[in-house]
Image (tube, rainbow, N blue to C red):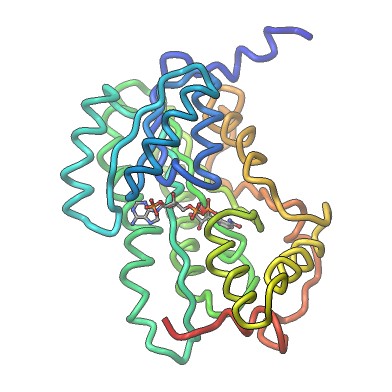
Length: 289
Ligand SMILES: NC(=O)c1ccc[n+]([C@@H]2O[C@H](COP(=O)([O-])OP(=O)(O)OC[C@H]3O[C@@H](n4cnc5c(N)ncnc54)[C@H](OP(=O)(O)O)[C@@H]3O)[C@@H](O)[C@H]2O)c1
């Protein structure tokens, strides 16, 4: 194997900040960056999970991974924490805006109950962080910004997700506009259109809920069937985002910007039934918060 082929993926000397990096997809995004040599800081609300993940990531990558507790729903906490992040890392070269929340309500329900929080955590917090990280990236004339978006931002994948989808759709639009403005400074901006991965988010919001309603195993059967209707015929494994982030964050991905990179096992190319017409499944996930 030609070792030179990997040089373009080398992130030695770069710094990375990954929100939601203690669990699920964010964990493997952080692992990919650390394995490629970047100095990585992960952030989320649960301190114990962060501490454990940072330890595991450091062991897995052979590269010290650090963490910062931060609540992205709290604008004051973001403002307070961001100076620490920038000072500790000496500026952020690679920003992965991955943290996110899902909440479901029908379009006829009181959307105000979930709108502000979803828009803050899934969209506005990313904008605040990008704004603060940009001066360093511009100074270096190099930067990478990658967001975790969702298949729901492009298609009616499930029901009750209008606010979640809108928050991710805002990220897609922001990605394009930011990429157009920042390209001349050597900064790329992309969003990942993520399909169905079995993480805590899916476990809590789908599997456990359907188990409660229809008995043990119902949730697992539903997600298997749902993901079965994709080209690869299965759910995504969380570690399958790792290589994608290594590509986009490094010089190997230097000519990719402003795009929605679809990582969904070919789910989006399939015809799907209208989720609102199902009697069991998506319709059960629509519940009062
Ligand atoms: N799993 C899928 O199939 C799928 C599909 C499409 C898109 N996505 C997107 O992928 C991203 C990662 O999700 P996941 O599936 O890996 O689920 P996950 O394990 O639940 O990850 C979500 C992460 O966001 C963090 N977070 C949530 N609210 C936060 C807040 N207010 N402040 C700081 N951190 C916060 C959570 O940590 P704390 O709870 O400790 O704060 C957690 O680490 C999300 O943006 C999600 O929308 C996932």
